[in-house]
Amino acid sequence: MSSKKIVVAVTGASGAIYADILLRKLQELKNQHETVEVVFSDNARMVWEHEKVKTKIQDIPFKIYPKNDFTAPFASGSAGYTHMIIVPCSMGTLGRIAAGVSDELISRAADVMLKERKKLILVTRETPLNLIHIRNMETVTLAGGIICPANPSYYSNPSTIEELAGTVINRVLDLCGFELDYKRWGKKPNS
Image (cartoon, rainbow, N blue to C red; front, side, top):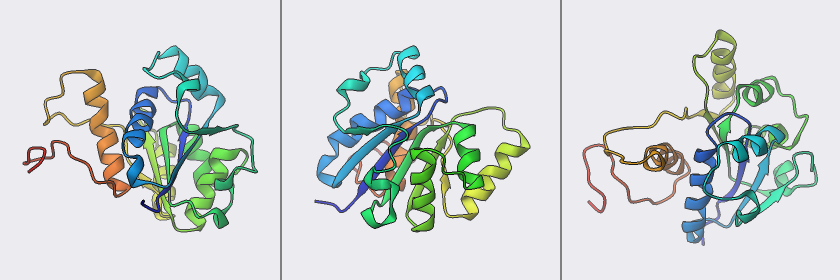
């Protein structure tokens, strides 16, 4: 079993499909991680229902923590979480992380990941970007975070919206060091 301990945070930006695909893939990859735990912002729950993603929140196979539960293990560096993925990441969440505001569990856990020098991946979902967004991305990047915009790739010739969104999640899982078999540029799966 891998020692990956992962926090998935879902915020209120449009693009709940990305979080849904990520959580389903993490379930498939359960032999490559020790634990996955989840936290939703209030707006994320609303967007999840509005965008009618495949999985119902109550059917997510991982423990879900309330957004203000500072007793969650990943609210402390001593718990040893190795990765945090915020997907989709709203610009408000990005701004709070960049400013060091830990007013709820998502921003607190992100702060922990940065201070512990662990992997923090923000799958931002906004366009166009203003200068504040860009500077916040720079601040988080300089602090050790990774900005991975939800920009799908097309070279695998996806035939459904889910396959298209999956190209983003495959990149995120690559960034976390998961072993995956999917079409990469210049290669076919299993080659």
